[in-house]
Image (tube, rainbow, N blue to C red; front, side, top):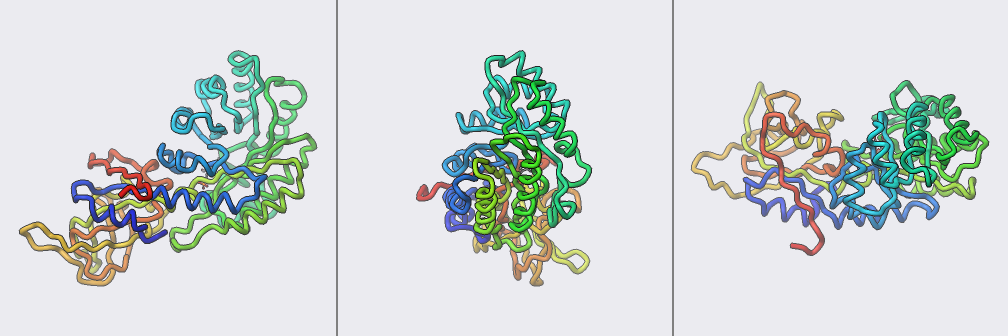
Length: 400
Ligand SMILES: Cc1ncc(COP(=O)(O)O)c(C=O)c1O
């Protein structure tokens, strides 16, 4: 799914210049991918989608049949997801939850709170006592756990196993568990443990992390119904055809689940579910040489697709050549075989991909950047320089 799917390619070529750039999402491809992921996981493993990766309502809804619920990390995400996919189970995580956000989540009936600190636990307990005294509230303390061999290997964004603002150190998490089981907070129900230690891990590392989390949780010596082992499945932007090995991950989780009958395991990936369904499509505005290097300036840029700037990679892309050139002025074209694709911002950081093999690339050609379905538009600084916003197209199979 690196080259645009047929649906994306057709739409990318049929849009007028003034309708570009645009985000094109192939919802059929998203459903097929999500079905494959769900199929690779054992029945006893729950799959939540971390909405922060891409909270577009159409994406949330398309994932609906394949996920058991959604992880949200702010009051804004909570309200948005609850209205986009009403009635689905939600887990409310993230650091620095405000009392107002916690109150809204309580009154809305959120099923699970991933509690990030002792302070947050005490605030939640008091708000629950005042706002929903008739029901118990499900809690999973989030633990920042060192894995057996130190920090999680390979993760491009490490959130555990070292000092971070995320979750609780094991000793503090143990205190939270005690407070949840010794009658200190009678209205809060300890459902289990949550951890999200890193993003960008391959299946072997993910399984090692999951094993560490489960064995730490079991070592607490209190009955637990569930352990959430987090998200963070790798997406390889340098080898866009590669996929996280869901089959191996599923087999490993099946072994883990079999060793702990009665325990529900849960994962909450974001990126590895939605990244592959999105393309950011644009057109080349200008082609020029600078100090021996060839540049193509495209409509839009990293203010729409910040992913390559934040992660420091070249966004994978395909060139869609077009013959149409309706202008009276000459058409600029690349003279060499490799071109750096830059956006319209006045900063040297506005580079989407360097040294792309695109011999003869011309103004008016289109470029489709793939793996743009996660942490793309929603993490970008849209208003910088006040360029127009992209269009958004959610492509349904057979919709033409
Ligand atoms: C608590 C938590 N869960 C899940 C995720 C999803 O991670 P990814 O999109 O890498 O799968 C994140 C990402 O930051 C997170 O912080």
